[in-house]
Length: 387
Image 1 (cartoon, helix red, strand yellow):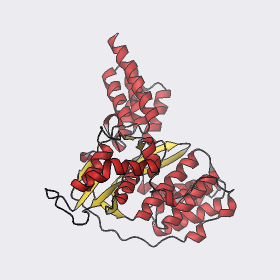
Image 2: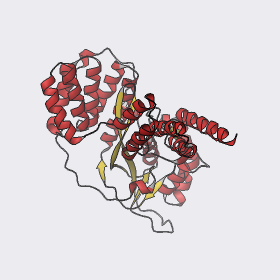
Image 3: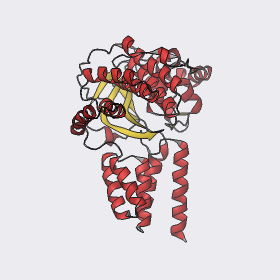
Image 4: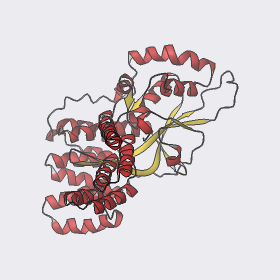
């Protein structure tokens, strides 16, 4: 989700181009889970709570949604109530993945959290809900020594049961999305079951706990993600990474190989298996798999960004700027790369270029805190230009 100054912009689509997908068979969950390797977790791993409405949400629905929904298309009433600036004032914030009640209480959430919260209200209003995965390139982030790939999901509200006419002909299906329309033009999507949305939520929580070094909690979330949807490959990959971080290489390898047997071109699983084999001293096997990985992904995420930072350390700011530009061609909305590109421009005396990159860094910032940091740097740069 990328919007200027991080205010939510909701895109309503009335048509979908849906890919036909044949889902591979599920992975053998019982063989992949090893609870005895981890201490008990104190994390509240509660599947029932993901879509549950809080008392505040029920009061809000009664006061702001239900009466309006009786007079017009309840889907549009829901969207206007939730996302118009005069109502909740929701903001995008990817600091943590929130369930429906947490997103409502915080008035903020990442794309998945906002989809879950909207779906929770829609189901409370009796609206038919379904989900889609939009087939766009993954967006990579780094946190706590982990590379995280993020996809994109949206929400579809089908036409509610026949009632009194709304006065205008409404579409059969209304898609709610948080990406700008130019990024979705021509993109395909595929249907997602709600169990996959649940697994995505659990998987996000697992990754967030892992980035903080909370291995027992991370395992508990990853375990539940795999149990919610045994066919969700990302959860099995996360489970393998948890095993690796905990030093359980045999269990990690078993999970990765099970995943690759089903999806031979899963880049994240291949990359993790190469790292595992190198760590285990199995150089020949690692090299063979590394060649296969290089065919699928010639350059890993942040490759040119890391080279650019190295060039910055060496004082070669012109080369750094070129490398940052190359990374941005792969990840045009990566806020961290924009920030470093701004530093390179400043060193080269290009204050206009630096200002543009800082604006992009702020617009694409995933959290409120980082947005405020970029805004402060942009204000200082503007002040310096006025002196």
